[in-house]
Image (cartoon, rainbow, N blue to C red; front, side):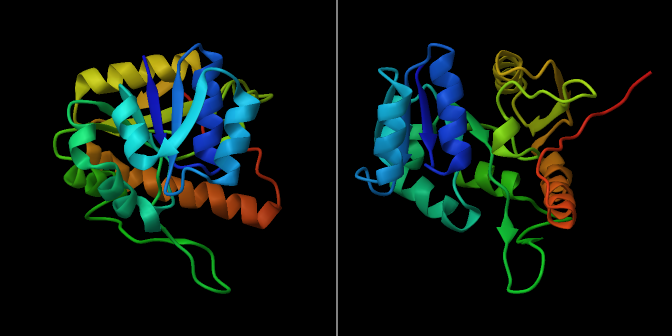
Length: 215
């Protein structure tokens, strides 16, 4: 399974390294294929890693990951070419965050819509699953906490795509995956990112994650 990742920030590089460690060939895509972060990641990750443009990554990957800043997500999809997403499982790790001076981040969409639903509209022929948006990049691969492993929350309209994503989560060390149903569940998962961020801002610590307790 080849993996294409759109975005060379912390999330994209972390997930790319995780897939490469599982023996997958990974291509990280950027607006600029000469991106210094991209070249450094390729050199550090080894022969399974390569870099290119957004279109290169979208064409290469059998499974794709959206790991862009929300402000650049639609443009990245346009540059990649929506036709290259058709029929593919797309892991949407984005959050529609809005940043304003002297205030905590907010959401560009919420309550009656979500970033996940918008991504699915931009990619009507793709099988989009919201995932990896409620935890920091440092804990996306093999999370380890004193209270046990956290849970990964997902949602999406395609049941087969969610099974693929659940298997990926397990391979990345997430034994518990909580499926919230259709992509409208992103209206709840994206505000969970704000909860994660606000706690980090108040405490100055970023080593936290969510777990659903059951009995």
